[in-house]
Image (cartoon, rainbow, N blue to C red; front, side):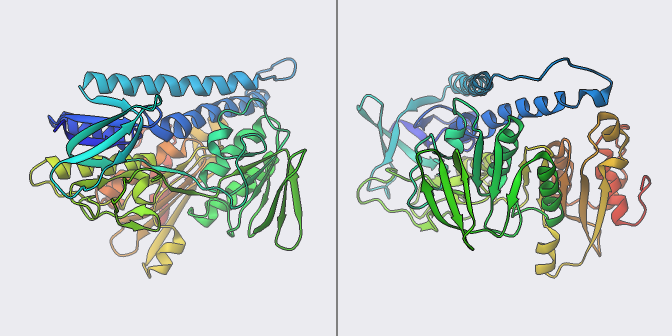
Length: 465
């Protein structure tokens, strides 16, 4: 036997799980099909944030007059260099993960992993086939599957990387499209809509559900829709695509009712599906739930000694949730007496401008659960720091349990929303109430003061509105 733990997948679940197991003194190997960091670091979270920062700076430069500054001439950009910087950021972070593996004595193998049957015994076998076609066999006491998810394809439409792309191909486009249709208005769709619009593309979002960012608070989604519309992005919700055609000059969509849309490119952002292709050897079957690995309260699959964490076990498809799940799974496996828990409280973030972040229940969800609650809202325009910074669009909204004042949900849209949500997430994880938030002195002037003011507003006693 070679290892205490074989980790398959080197993304936010895999590399974090491998590191935690190594910290616990275990002999670990991490198998990654492409490069350390997985989809998030190489083709998702990190490179997209580099692109969005370029878009944010470009937009800011267009408003320098508001700050008493001036720039002569048109603000130009080198799209290829913007994309190159995004890739270099990913490369730097991937090298960092590879260094962590080396420093913590974690073996790192690049190749396609396949778990061999039978897998019921105490020793597990994983075959890894490298780019050269050669296969090696790893053996271990346990396996942690962290292979993540991949973008869902549009039935009958081939992703060619030119006219039809997913988020992965969008990260390596050579030139900015003159026009682009984005199918799906979740976080990925909205982030790329903001990015391409900032660099001159005519962007049209088509969403089948009644609102953009369908999982977010309705008021937040409506404000983002208004903001996007002001920025020049066209948005069509409650719109179902019935036909997709790839033409010589671009792509054409026909939606219910007969209306058509045409553009140079189509970005398909309709969700993700589990990455299990080629993972299970002949004769090996793991129980699935809607295509995702089914795991118990200890993150163990239907086969003893094989565990799963991250996107491969289903929603929410978030890097930070994946990392937390992997740590829980590893500690449950190797720490005596540790009882892992499944994730229930987690922040969700969308990094367009304005940013969107949330944790806990929306008003709709609270009503569906028959939970009595109070709502507090505080606008950015009443924050001295936001106004001084020229970032006065947005609001902070918090839901408190009516009886005890516990925080059951929080929703933020505006500058640095993805940073501000941490206070509410900590509060919910620690079962704090409005009293603890109110007893905490928030520095002035900061955007974080709005977290406090929203709680005061829910109690009917805000100071600055």
